Amino acid sequence: MTTAPATPSSPHVMNTYGRLPIALSHGQGCRVWDVNGREYLDALGGIAVNTLGHNHAQLVAALHDQLGKLIHTSNYYHVPLQEELARLLVERSGMSNVFFCSTGLEANEAALKLARKFGHDKGIERPQIVVYEKAFHGRSIATLSATGNPKVQAGFGPLLEGFIRVPINSISALEEATANNPDVVAVFLEAIQGEGGVNPMHADYLRSVRALCDARDWLLMIDEVQCGMGRTGKWFAHQWAGIQPDVMPLAKGLGSGVPVGAVVAGPKAATIFGPGNHGSTFGGNPLAMRAGVETIRIMEQENLLDNATRIGAQLKTALHQALAPELARGAVKDIRGQGLMLGIELDRPCAALVQQCADQGLLISVTADSVVRLLPPLILSAAQPSRLWPLCAR
Image (cartoon, rainbow, N blue to C red):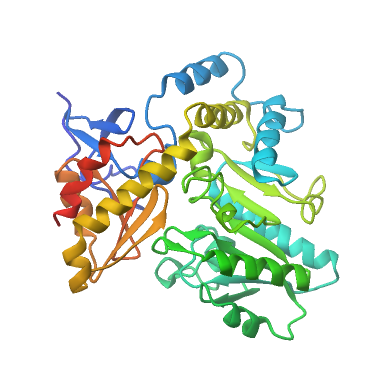
């Protein structure tokens, strides 16, 4: 039997992750096994990536088929699978055009470029974009500047200018921060903040921001990288508020593990970029596009949006019941989120729970120091959440 590595990482790999001493070898459905044969329930899903779980027979067959045809060509040429995946995203979002890249960071970077060019096209020399406290949009210099986490920003200054930061869910704070400022061009937010602690934007707030953007001719840009692709029970989390953004970055769950990123644009933003304004060597390659097409097809075939709604509600209710004493005494401060994107906020830092839960066969993450984050595959069944009770016992 293969032995798991004794150290968190290889001496030849940059030390950029605080890894657990676990090496996974294979998976099936919502379960994974390490190189020593130990089984785990995957309640993290690759951080909202493994939409269809692991080793989904139809996805694997489709990817094998595509590997025998084309993996990569170039965007010098038309890629029919790009056109197919773009059509599927447009139909489900109600928007109009799509740019493909490979990651959420790239999608958010493209959104920021769109906003700046939108401003320059209107004659604004130094465009400003509204962003949020506790936001996370990536670790490039631009997306790091838009991020609202001083810990991940430390050591990388000077950050880019052009951002106005406001608290979530306060329309008065947004109006005050932008009053009499003709250089504002966009509002950039996550429908549910992921890395920031699973913090949802309220539906009324989203509707108010949409109205303000319309009144002031700003772009509304909603980062759905983590909360999109059915995770909350709708294709995109902002749809619960009955609104539509002008720009919507996607990634993570779009390819069920194959790297795929996208920027979906509505009519107001769809023609801002022209040839030469933006690009991506790997973006829109045939293998990634096939993964996206098959992910959406299988999600619909297996009714995974309904499953996320139903199982997520059951899990949230069960967590409230199991943790009622801790909620009453304040040890658990809140249980929040929607569908299969849930956060359990404790009254103290709880990073140690990641290893403790892994020791009991459960993979989770802790974000924002004190929030247990659950992002299981959307195929999670009603029977499997019972495996989450070791967490509740803590």
